[in-house]
Length: 496
Length: 95
Image (cartoon, rainbow over all chains, first blue to last red):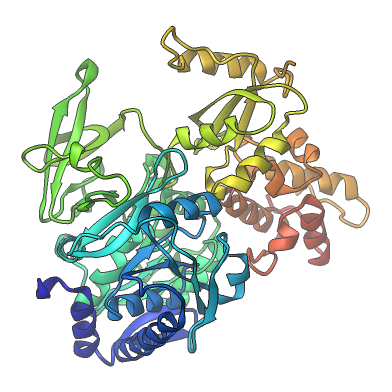
């Protein structure tokens, strides 16, 4: 469907808003015309580079790079070249990339040129791209390349078990819907300037800040690197942002920082999503800086879902965005699970056929795995069924980490579960049974070598046994008691 | 003010840095964990959010503004952080 082609939409926006500023990073500002010119040039360079590489011309090209304006230009260049961009979390390592190559047929990657030599897979070729800080890395195919659906426009990833991130295929219609729904539901306009602190591999950034910005001719500021308060203040000053998009841990940090309220004077709205924002942090941030934080609830598979439009309403996660219908169904113990039907739903998991479809009912509602209810038209999330752990907006499947730990020398059993630190932030807790010389350093190193850094457990307890039921299921309440008991004797639980 | 004289209080400064690292991780990493990894924050399992917490704490406690990209190597060890504080001539506590 031609009206849902991303390249046409982006090109039309660049032509319509030609002289307006589009993308900013520090002192670098590109107008819409400059964005179109740069992305078109890069698309031609990419075409030439791929033509010179061995193997068939790929219909999908990954962007595996740090956040930057060049990241977005690479994304647009892939779109302009008529290929499907596959957005891969830069934190993924060899294990994840190996699985993506074999399961998703990705053989071409746009990476930061300065770190191309550290690309986790053995490259077939590395080609610098003229006019970009990115290079093209190609790798040989590993098995059959699975076909994408005919209308797939973008691929992104969500957590998966056994080290295999699940690849979400989004149609052009779904990507457009997510952006249009966000614009209509939140009142994003041409005068807005968004400072986005999340990576574009994450739905928070992708759905709130990318295509939606182009649809209305607004301005987007990209933030590279870790978002410290000093850097955020500088970015706010450079960009004169009207909107801030960030994960809750950023608001926690800013609420604790001793910054002048004037630094935030230009902001009309702060958007938080990805994890629960505690009420006390919201209150401190809003009191200190005079900026409202609006919750946004999105689901990787379904796109943006709810947003609180009413500044006076202080509970829940807001009302459904346009194109979104909420429903609940009773689960075990009468707990209601949230179901969603959205116009921005992913089509399927490329590397897990049938799995997404199995979670969508006959009426098109997707079972989110989140427990909650709808009250006064607002969504309230109260917990989760078993499944991924939400680490500051990144979903982690504990079974993936357990599988890695159990492969390490000396480990007899291992369980990973969600815990909270002294600062009430969610962290990964590993309970492990093993024999010497197993220790924390070895476990951390073993995990770091095999997993993305954010999946490495922060808290590690050494226990003599994992309490399990007769069917082998972990008795989590008992395990928490065991690890509390072992806390006074670190590594003392190891036995030979 | 409970200032630390960084010229003479090397041990005290190191212990304060270790304490800041522990707090930055929400106490998920202990001082013993850190010392067991020879002061390497990465080896002890300090993640990116904890790094951000640590950078904020160094600013609050020592007036040391750390750039996570420029100072990445120094920030990755207790020794490096102590050196960052000393090179900034910091030591006054404004907590």
